[in-house]
Image 1 (cartoon, rainbow, N blue to C red):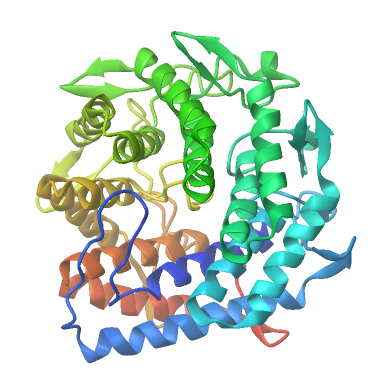
Image 2 (tube, rainbow, N blue to C red; image 1 turned 180 degrees about the horizontal axis):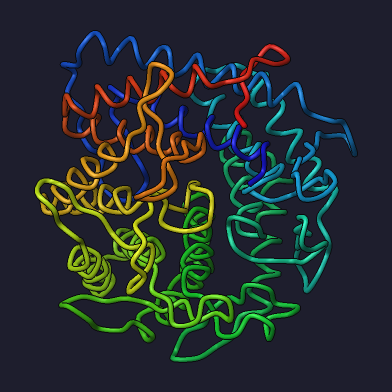
Length: 441
């Protein structure tokens, strides 16, 4: 994994947990009221977490390199020489969104300045194509692919531009966000009364059939753009994506599932990916009032719940259906605005949208399972990649912290608060102090 990406992931997780004790709107339905009665321990922990976020940001900012009127960041990977990425997962897009979220939390103009500088560098990397824009994705294994997903493609870059336009009203950001849409729509494949967006339009034949999670991610980006502009074209595009997703849904166990069916994921059913589709369909119901979207979203959650492995007060899920490995992380992607870190986060979003306490109960059981995997060391708790491992991983530990914070924020669960505190302690005790900030291996 990327050393740099770990630091961003940790910072993003802290940023989420810093919202403990406040009412939180996660953009998928209804606001969840948070009790004003929170313990002094929780209030103190929130302040410490926000301080840690800012220290992580200090290190990120210290690594910025000027180019093309903006800033870029080197991605250091032990498998190859350093490179400069545009992507959400390991590059300027993720850094820009992280710093923008921190600006919104603190009001510190430095964070907005660097978020906009990341956007300016991304503008310099935009490639005009098919009436819009695309961005090169680079890592150790490939150079200059042009992809569509949020984690490494145009919908992630476009999301940063949408968020910046909403805040600054700078029309240049809107032009590039809409340009990302124009390029992706130019490559849409129409079938089943709707359409899907390919993963890699230039080389899609190498990847087999389309992955439905990609269309769900593109759909969520388009919903953000529709909310920002009110342009009905974007909700129409969302309806086309949703129609395709409904058409390829597979009924099972009183619910619905979707197959990834890519060359490198043949006939795989990932619980996190089904959760992403559910999130998009919940949002579509919210925007349109079409109850079919709600039916399929709830069906997706019913399928996820039906596959839980229960032991006492704990619940866990396989990495994918039929694969007897139990991971904390639900997939390979880094948890982001549109991508989940665990099945528990899927369940919490569904609970916050529907108020269905079954989803909350299973999320709490999943939190108990995560706690059972805690590795006690260095005065705190760390977490491994999967059940049966004993290697603590900062990246995994950071989004366990994020999930536990949401559990506590919703339920006030004392055990979640205790584990939050110990998990945060481990992350701080294992941080490296450099250039006035924090980083993690």
